[in-house]
Image (cartoon, rainbow over all chains, first blue to last red; front, side):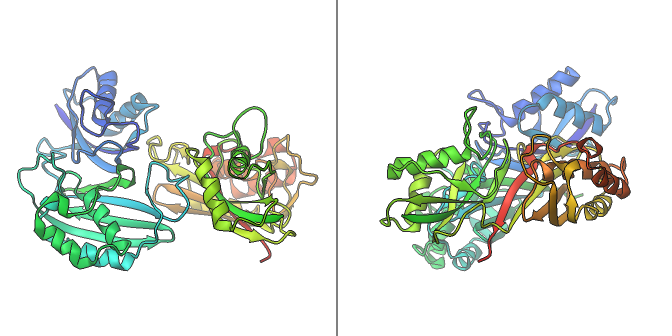
Length: 248
Length: 248
């Protein structure tokens, strides 16, 4: 038995998310089918982050076990990629991992990037890859609002109602807002996130950027521990899982 | 009569290029239809660069004439954008221009960016937006090759056979190659380009990057004044018209 660690890039648009389910194509299912096509083995692909419908990844991490030591990691990567065509999913790197390594449980941080295109014109090149916000946003105010969320908190106000996490307590290490011309980028990093946490934080920071909320309102929303106290959920299109960290 | 200058962004994938023609959807045709839908006027949209099938634009410039002075430029922009939905085309800025201004004939430079993704894995997030080159490319060698093309030359070797330009003489002001991780970016700027010139230069520089050609071979190809002497045409997917310059 050999365990392989895979770094995976995908466009989330044609998928109902990472996790295999009955109601549509998933990234996990696509990779499992590709592994079967080249190895004849039905494996379960364990992923570090269960991204939602329409959410993208540059650096999702997954692992698979194959009942052989015949394949080096590059062979596995190339074979999976050959069978993934023409789907917008690619294994961008692969390595042989220790049997202790687990893509999900060994991970010590996840990072996400959320992109807002802040202009009067609708999206063209960024369709499906960003949130179009027409009203001018104040990035300094958004940054001040973001600071209120950094640290160890009960994030119930930013958690999807159907979130399955046992505890709403999370430690948010990074929540940084920056402007690059008409693009506003929100970078978030934590050991783990609640369901929809990044999108709910971004939807809330938009209110601050528009001047409808003050940074103090973000603190109040956090303290309320009630989903209705925070802003709306930002659309999936703008979100990308950028990287996953491990102790190595 | 009022002349409006428009800056246009588009994803080239669903179009047979900028210029209106009978065999498929064009960007020019889409904008002309949108102008008609809101103004009732059949105008001709003049564009600065006639991009090919699949070529993208961030900063195409065009102008239209409307037989009215009723509309300010922002109104024209918003109205065209409303009627362009759901196509991946957007007018990103608009201004009232002098009757002397001509998007094509007043332009004094055009700039293009070509993106290569240089890795073993196929494209996923960059599908349709980059050229996938698997063999490692030497960017220093590509830069040395690119330098041989800068200046005033007969670019016959880099010109499509069906190019309609009267003269093959062009002045290439910028041809810069840089690496950003696995992305290689080629930036090109000139007063104007021959048909397929950027893609033919990039296809040639790839040969240099792979070590199949030396920079001296680029000079020899240029001097040959024969299309077969240069490298193959790089695919349209990687090419974007980034900006057009005017004397103002």
